[in-house]
Image (cartoon, rainbow, N blue to C red; front, side, top):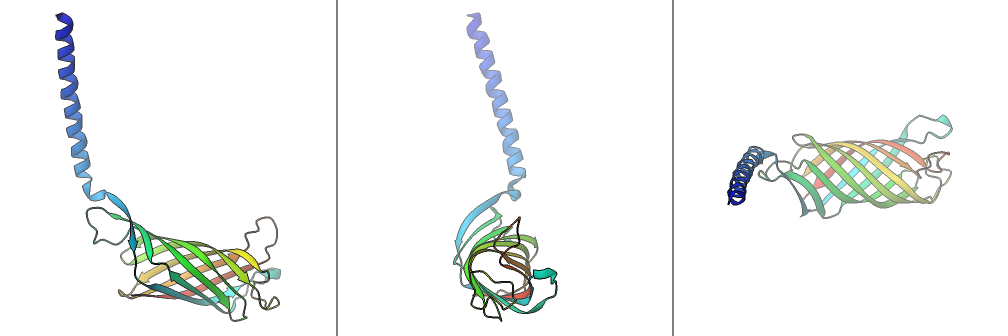
Length: 202
């Protein structure tokens, strides 16, 4: 009989503590309700961007910039993003976009491929983004002096700061880099670009 009484008291204390802890946890969760985030995949409308700027090759220690380089970005029609779960009207905290990339200089050499762009909200309407892509370089003029000398796959990087001036227009400052990723030897392809971009969204 004593064992049953002790077991009964123990279960009551355990249940009361569990309910109390559950209430505390529920209160904490409720207080952080506005901080809850939500990842979602969205179907997006048309968006394309043109970046134009000057480039350098760094070949033979040449650090001078030359004109002119163009990069075209076509955003594929879906986006994975992070937003507040309870206030969807806010701007996205983080956006992940797949892109088609076309890159060329006025010398005739060009490249095309795919990339992924990750954008972080800095302040209202402004994003800092990093883009990494794999492109195929097609060299039509190997002596052009634009840094693209070898045919083949290359890495395409872009660090950008963008600002939406309207629902349809976005402007950006960009630092692009193209190379074949050689870490311990002189790369065959090497090009740095400083450019201004303008994007159109429908």
